[in-house]
Length: 278
Image 1 (cartoon, rainbow, N blue to C red):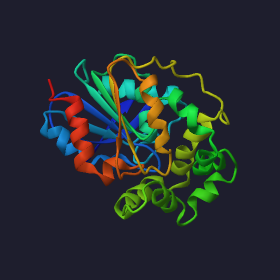
Image 2: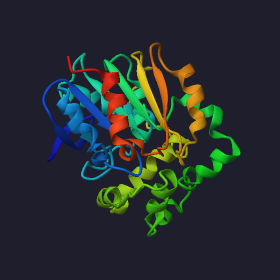
Image 3: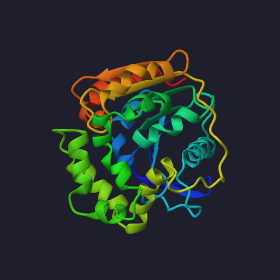
Image 4: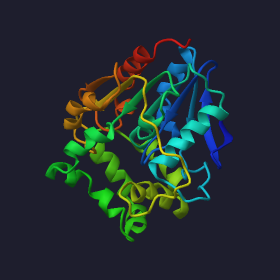
């Protein structure tokens, strides 16, 4: 898949694309890249979708945004603008993993159907985030609020350690090659950390982007039973915070990067949920 570029919401986005048909937007998380969708995108194309996976704002080769905004409203505005610039209509669908899941929960009725992986709706996450076990898993979130964040995250083995903890037993060497290519420069790494600083309010909201509107269409939520980033206990509360007609499922034996660890199973669940392109 070749890398293309498009201008949306004031940012020059790089993206991967395959297939023809209604738009299927695939959004990656941290520390990851658009290449994380290398198993799903051909499957979506085979079902008649035009699968597009952007590198999120600040992740090279997408540019570092001039406004320095990384709050949820900025991410949601990016997705809305990409939907428009890529010619997505009422038949478009969206899939988001980790940070890519956050904007999916705030896109109103823009997408026909949606899928989120590994990060539940905010209301569900709050019920378990402050447990002792989860706070231990989330040490990096608090580290990233400090001035030591960039130095620590650039240390050899830090990102490798996150992948190993989050998806135990998965060989992430290929993925980490993509990650280091994308976040290898200090400015790009600082941008990725900026998402976390905005999340906890260490960096105040820019106020440059409209507030997200709760997604109204049905969402399929998938979570690995062995997720070492967010414990699988969050799944039990997810249905209470999803739109009507949604569903939540736990993928047995998978960790945080479940779409890479169990590609056949996760692809099947996603494709069955989305249905054929209309």
